[in-house]
Image (cartoon, one colour):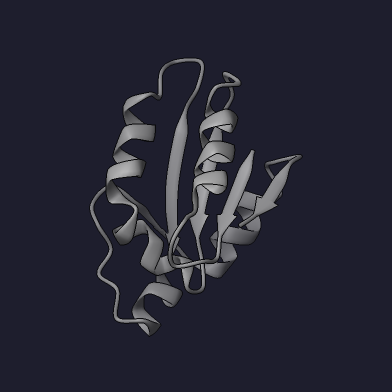
Length: 101
């Protein structure tokens, strides 16, 4: 599942959805875009917890749209993969399910 986060902070319901997606033993990618670029910093503890739950059956990839982070003055953490818009489009084509939060 591809989860596109466009908000600066995640609420409890959104975190529950992400946790549920990770429990289905499949590859999950989270992309922080727009104001969501802030969330990868604000939600670092939650993301670290999610990454720690990754295993051979349930893989989590975390990306940030580099242009969105730069436009907002957000420094990318080493825990995320920078992604340009072309890469985002390519990533979306690899998933059958996409959720925007």
